[in-house]
Length: 204
Image (cartoon, rainbow, N blue to C red):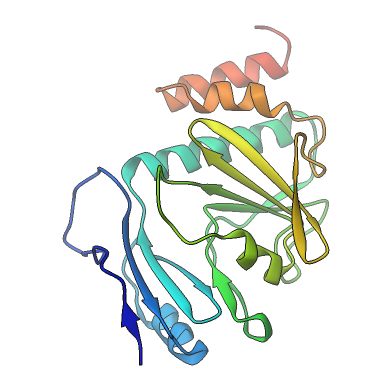
């Protein structure tokens, strides 16, 4: 039997920008998750599956703005530093043998194109709640995961079956995450991208 947590169901008609909308189901078979993911075509709906627990989430406006700012800034850095970065957005990744699946906020491969799973995943973390995604990423074999939480980056690098907290990205070692965070916090996304470009070029 599938059991539902007492959390708000993401409503297709809701327009409230405040807070993440989440709904969690327990005891969900893998085949049910796959069918729901393939058939539910609700714009913005994200699903995270971990060993029978399924979280459905509709991100807030603030969530989407933050993840897009981070993506634009990281991609600008790669362009300015000639780092071969290949982006895959929020596409669905899943592995039946590990009973795990999700859609990252942003994801990338560094140095080559996607084979099965990305090298780097970026997640914007709500102020509270939400399924722990590190075990999901571990089962998918993602090398590095960045969490943007409370206006700060928290980085984790894969060490076999576990992740280790790291201070500097091992995939993009020249990227100053403290500096990047400063521009993510800017309220004007366009101005932030221009200012970061100037900073990278040494003109600001």
